[in-house]
Image (tube, rainbow, N blue to C red; front, side, top):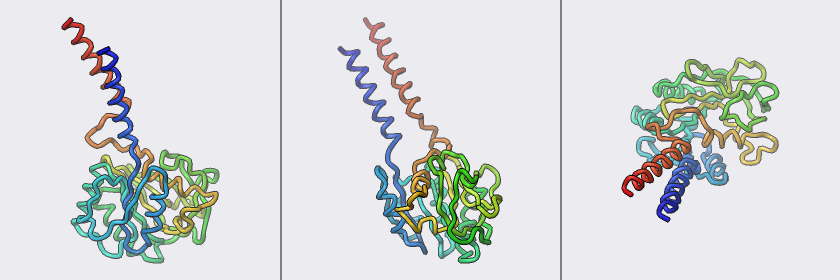
Length: 261
């Protein structure tokens, strides 16, 4: 009976640890120019996820428990303290999604985002020009949506004019333009256990939450909960490793009992 009880205890512990690793995603929307309610309502409307709007200087905001921080269209330069807060957020496994605008509309947004990305060690920069004017449809079939865990399930994507990106180093491309496939529309990069994403088109949210046949909803949920391939914080064991650890502890416990008998 004691052996059965020990097995039940270990299985329950492993189950709880695995459930903890699959916790619902939490988003925080930090926006200067674009209405944060659009994104906030979207994430709150996704089953199992939650979101809140945060305001003020980033270094004064408590981001404990937040998985994805949207940093949208900065109307002022980021302070050194805010850059430090972003860096700490990334080192804790957080994700930051920057959203600017196309380069002939409000280029200052992108210039400020470029500063933040460089300061954080990212190899992604915005070019202040414009590509693909007017609403467009990107798809896997036309080669605009690249295969990646973050674009999993995203077969079509609605967007409009965007500022192309420069990508180097370990940064990866997720989507490219229609008129010029060399124009990068969306990219991301892992920085330690955290990740940064960059989009320069607010029109991708214009039809939220009802995008019809487009998979923007899946794309933006992937940014919150998709696998970026970043290493875990402090090398926390994956659920499978936790299960093996639990069974190993059970084996040691049983061996001790046999020896004592």
